[in-house]
Image (cartoon, rainbow, N blue to C red):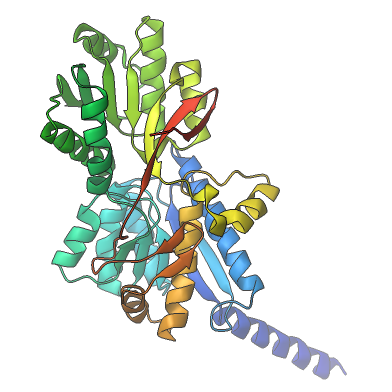
Length: 371
């Protein structure tokens, strides 16, 4: 009897191990800790909700999705370390990274190892442009590009603030400078020239000298390519000098932490974000499920969810979990059904036909404004 019990236990362990080995593991990489951890939390919540929904319907080709979370803190060096760890583990799919400065160097590691990376947030065109130029077919994004965002908001700024003094600032990162340069170029093309353009040092606590410089230049409008910690501090310190300017940002401040930093000084801040996925009928069930768990699916939450959906549909379409075949299947011109709507990828792995909202912060919340 003892021998039978031991044999039964061993057999059970073997079967459990085999079951785990048959899981489909997807890595979720982003800033899980650090000043941008709210973005990492959005990634986690969205990816987990998608995995749970897909697993509840039988998984992918009969396999259950298992997520492995990796923290890069939006730091390029850590991102490369994370990418090496993911590929060494034999994981073929990555939902990430967040910051373009992380995604771009990490993409080289994934390309070398045949891993399919799809970012739900990185917007710098270099990521997919360089990949295409180098013949890397496994670098994609389920998000919009800076040049598309610039083409949308730059002309709007030029028209809306014609005759006003506009400054263009950025935080010297691949993301921040990339989007600021794109906005400035299209704004200039429409006839509005900035009175001030420069980079700031992220992570500082005192931007009073910069505020004074803006004030002396009689700046009415600031477009800032960067993140919420610096944006919030600039607004607060400007308010302390009894100075108010119209701040316009890219998608990075779709987070409650912006208001936590800026407080009432953030009133009226504008930012560009892809047309609100929470309002789409395709997202209704997912939004309700995520909210029932006490999390508001704002920012990049649903884009991370959509990446998991894209991987699942790509694997089913390819009939294989070979990342190269899945990438080919996703870029074959056929659409993918996701919580952010029906999406189609071009040959570079970018989304086609992106659309945007201009959102306004007021009383601690944001919403699209009428255009």
